[in-house]
Image (cartoon, rainbow, N blue to C red; front, side, top):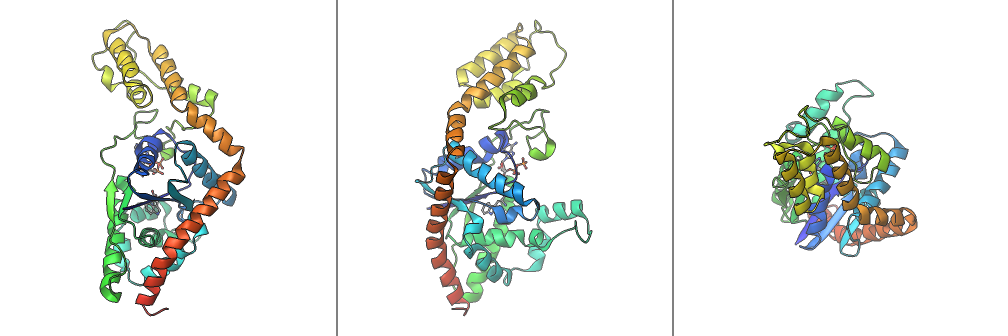
Length: 326
Ligand code: ADP
Ligand code: TRP
């Protein structure tokens, strides 16, 4: 079974990304042949700062490897190191009905926000985004594609494209199944809304100690006194976050003390910071080691790209042959 997913390099990864996407992906390494790549071509549809892209790409590599992604156990690479993706994307674009792309919510939302300004407006890449994504997936005969709910429609487009190509040119591509993570809870941010970098409410996985402590200590609580019992303790935002990063018994203890009364919010937030800091201690150390050895990381990515190309090249050849290009 081949499991494939792409990760956009778009800034520092946060607890929402970690519990919602990274941890499940890292755990899936054990279940099949995992192919994970950094979708730096996709990031071009929204980010035009070259230095930032380079930095974010390396950050994603470091963050994932520090958190347990093992380039020995999976194939891990940078999308732009495998030109087969863009080559296949063109081929697929010729069997993709425009209407299919026009109906994509993600495109419609982004287009509505950008407007039609000649320079700042909607670019063709944004429109063609799902076709490149289909190429990413179909190139490797992927069976399972783990993604968040927001990517569900893009997976449907991929399936439609694969089926259409197979009908027109003969059985060529494996039609993939999405693995939608709707069992993972949405991680709340500092304001109680979904944690997201666009809401400015994130706790970064590898944030600066002082800055994260400050963020956590400034989480808004209600005005009940420490002594007052809090029968709704399980709804408390700090408790919810604590449950993610603290051992079960520790989180249960804090929840019990909050419910009974006598635990102040300041102490509770301090405890959350400590638990967060401990939870990522090993990963933090690993990340520092990797960051001091970027050549090693680079070698892993290049090696990953070579392994990816040896698989993708075969499928691309098959597709080219099927449509009379080869
Ligand atoms: P952001 O909302 O910060 O821009 P992305 O959309 O880049 O994050 O998220 C990448 C993946 O991380 C998503 O597909 C989703 O699965 C996961 N994710 C992001 N935020 C959360 C969250 N708050 N809770 C759970 N999962 C999340
Ligand atoms: N569009 C995905 C996202 O924003 C990233 C991505 C690019 C992807 N290509 C992919 C995910 C292929 C799965 C498979 O999260």
